[in-house]
Length: 117
Length: 113
Image (cartoon, rainbow over all chains, first blue to last red; front, side, top):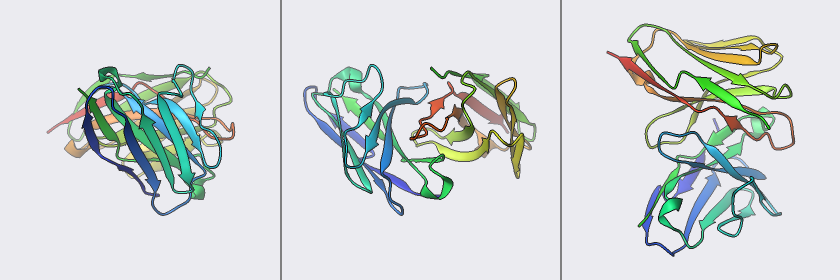
């Protein structure tokens, strides 16, 4: 299947700092990518849809000024958690639709574990 | 909006036995139903999927069945092995341009050796 990478795999930061997470599609182009957040022992919650060349679409309840998304190219989307606080500590996962499967199938990155102290 | 319920939340089976996980969706417009396996600290991996024009799909020890009328779909794993131990998520999506997924709550499967 298609490969999606994320960087970094884990990050620890102090409260009030900003953290950038990268999501890359390695062997295909993705005009759309998705960002999810997963708390321990819970399901994946969609945060936003990242659109290449246009603004991201945020799900209800997700603060767009806090979670900045930039889809800089057809293979890269970034999520920046601004002024991070301990409650933002979570597992952040991105995904991209496979071009070979009519966009239905999403391939997920390995995730980024964020710990805010 | 769409809601996906998943049961059971935890499941323990003896190695070699079968495991069944069930999901129910609410939006009749949903037409694509993937299943993902997530190991600890990793991203979800697609294991099988089914579209609404198909009632059953099988891939070796894994099968998925879909009942559109009842809005149920199930994952069946036969001859379970310890390496099948993980959290399994079902999801539903519909053709709304971007195929957003609504995930079930997850099932923690433990295969006992």
